[in-house]
Image (cartoon, rainbow over all chains, first blue to last red; front, top):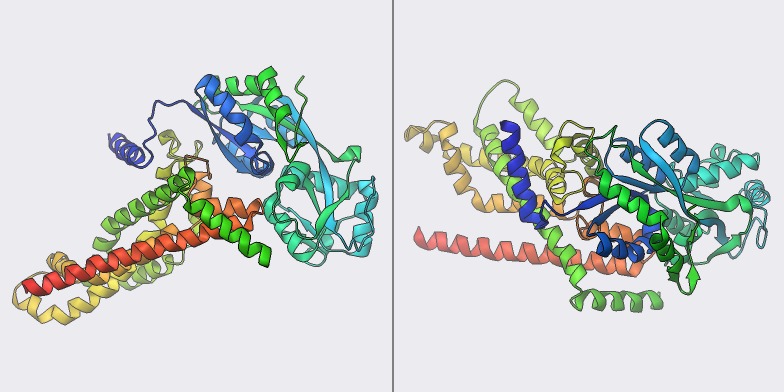
Length: 271
Length: 237
């Protein structure tokens, strides 16, 4: 009874404020900052929304946080880029099934002055080793995001543990890609970033791409429907339509056609 | 810096040219924060006034706690409200996470202690001033609350403005419980955070300038209104 009254009051309040009708179909997608900041989602979502009438509400956070939010049931679909963690998410029963969606790559950016002399390198492991030896400033996400996980894998391949120098030349910002690039730009530091965020980033300052093209810099995105058996309130039907659309011909074509300053940022590769 | 200045100017003119999306964001910011302040007033003023006049054990401790809550970190408030409204939280069935209502709830938690603490202070001073008169009229302490609140109304407007300032400028809580969803829960502060993370610093700063402009406008409006009410009151008196 009391719960109903509270609910009615809150719903009324919500309606007054948003004027969004309760019947309107929508899904919440937990995703990463790279898909939003690059403008990709703003570009492809209107097509899906027009076709299905389903409004897609995107919460853009780091992959680690997106996965935790999805485990709490606070999202219907997960669109992130950390394959291992995504497979774990499905294996633990939180997700229904994982599908490849698209890929791009990571790049190492750094100041023009390039104190570690890594410019034009194609071996990211050699480059990171050089940065560590030069003790050149490096800005890391430090937030358990997909990019941070990739960075840590590369450091361990380089046989270095930069966290020992945390607070010295190794700076963990604990924030999103853009915020980390702002830090790197401000202190002329190196940073590992996905190419999409880099391409659309507006405060590059003296930073430029120094190392790219290493196969280990491959960056795969996957999509997963949050398991309605774990969270009965998941909007499974609408969420499934979004997953199907994204990995189907229309979604893949939309991703393919998104270009920023003439450059394609994401490459569809759903099977 | 020359380039930045011109970039800033163009960003300001861009946003002022009546960009519909921007004004929707401004409007949502205002709606959420005004709602939050009104609810906080309904809760905070009676609580603050009651604390000012009532005498009971633990009252001092309660006042200290309330004063301390004025500095409650918004991120922590956001986290607590998130945990409560999450689908796996106690109020998950209400489906309020990532809605403006969730943002209002978070801001109410942030603003209520400010309103209550400032009300307590103002009313306590008035109560002392009028204590003899009230006693001679035979008014009990708690019954004097409405009279004292009415008498303190001008000072209380300032308390509400302080609360509004905290609400409209806050980003840590609303970005967690609102999710900064385009067209749904994006407000001025979360839009500024987003543009900063995109490296669009001039645009972010321009949005900040507009936010400050709104704050000034709201304060000027309220101050004009309360001044007029004051003069009106004097005329009647």
